[in-house]
Amino acid sequence: MTSDDADELRALVRATRTLAEQLRASGASGVPAAPRHVAVATRPSSTSPAVEHAPLPPAPPPLPEASTTPPEERARSLAALSAEVVGCTRCALAGGRTQTVFARGNPLAELCFVGEGPGADEDASGLPFVGQAGQLLDKMIAAMGYAPDEVYICNIVKCRPPGNRKPEPEELSACLPYLHQQLALVSPKVIVALGATAAHGLLGAPVAITRARGSWRLYAGRVPVMPTLHPAYLLRQPEAKRDVWRDLQAVMERLGKKR
Ligand code: SF4
Image 1: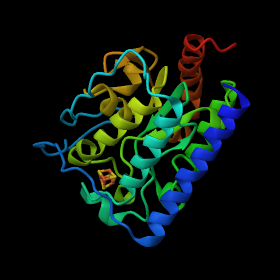
Image 2: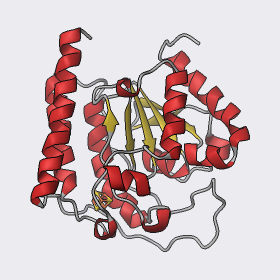
Image 3: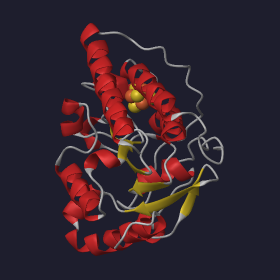
Image 4: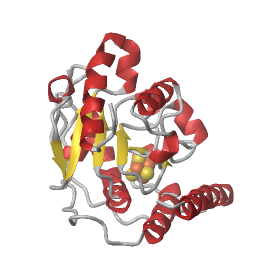
């Protein structure tokens, strides 16, 4: 990427943020499509923190070999999608949010991190992974040799679940189409799924993350996904950082980054 490209991207990111702020300030409502989901069963009564047993969300649409859409157009489409999400009321999480939390980072990054959903800090700031877990994620990203604005970071759901509970299946299903559109536009070479909910949403099947972590999977039939543990889990279980670092080293190797 040339410095001109980088400047243009930075300008587009700034424009996206400005547009989103303007829409929020004006109280505008978006024009979300009707939800495509989904008959949903009740949540399980007992799960381990690392295992998700909820019913399957919709499978991601197949992706083409690589995006042939020009970078500027992809960044503009992401900005438009972000603006649409600002007014979304597809699921009950809309009622409890301060604001939607779409993404941060480079909209054309080769590496994308997907988490579960916004917490209190993210709900307040409008950006994903800015609390304690986010600071740990930033350290891991730096250790991989990336600046924060070189990767793309987003979540499965864009609104904060009350009390930081896991998103309900119907909430996952309502929000997943946004994630699929995001990932189709960003067109990353590799996705890191942070935690069981992210892996479930990306892979379309329940995931026991402590067993699944460290093994490559495929998103939409094409994009390699590395499931690993969520940074919030690492704050509670710091001894697991070693495992996550192994997973991230596999990602670096896949992307040709020096170790
Ligand atoms: S969580 Fe997703 S689907 Fe639900 S209201 Fe927020 S943006 Fe819309």
